[in-house]
Image (cartoon, rainbow, N blue to C red; front, side, top):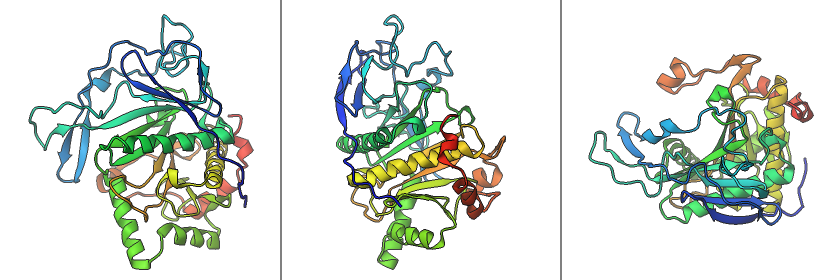
Length: 373
């Protein structure tokens, strides 16, 4: 196990406004320097009028955003809207300059803070209030999240924490979900390494259920669930992939996907902003290790969905465990994990491999095997 004592990755940030009125923040390990105009693919804002309707049987909101039908879809390589602008006559989303990570308002959002009140409609129709942001991990179009240096992954954790704090400060947001979809198999339409942030004016059902379960566990046992979970997994040793001391990766004993991997701090915290410098560095190294092992597993870039779970922002929830869940979409070489009848219709997952076996396979993969894919 490793103990990280170095200082946290520096977080330099500079805010900008795009020609179409959208906000953008550039983050860097060094002070941000911009050497071109701030661009936007179009000077005109998209007329976003998202709305929501209540699903009475599932007890959850469904988002509708008709303007998203016109969003960029698998553009040719010569037009990459997430790369820094090289030809001012054909502007992209990012400027030229020195910075590591960019965050900007999604041009085609599913939710907006100023969503107009829609006309009365069925199923409790209401405005789609929230915020959708794009997080560009690197200026390089060819890389992966796992190609970032340890310091840059650490910086990304800091960016996610900063965005959560800023969104909470609007007074309109009750839950923030940072995530990354990777691979055409999961519907990615832009290959440049990036993720997204969805901020909701309510607590979504997954986070609400997690919070309720964790608070009930704490009330019954008097201990945070994560403390007992980490102790149990360390004692067993069967499912831990990598233990970095202040963070670890594990195939949880209740994994729904074949090589599902969780990355978590070993001290119970509820928000990324609560991590100490050493803890954040450990979490960054463990996350990078997990992603490289998944790519090295079959010798190809594993398609996956990565989600960062933090406590709801509608009040203190100290029992909620900060953690990152990675859902790999291959269960074997060339074999996708499809959500079929029992998963979609009943919410009950069927897994072809025991977590203990999956963890053993991932432990056997050297992270270096995934470095040059």
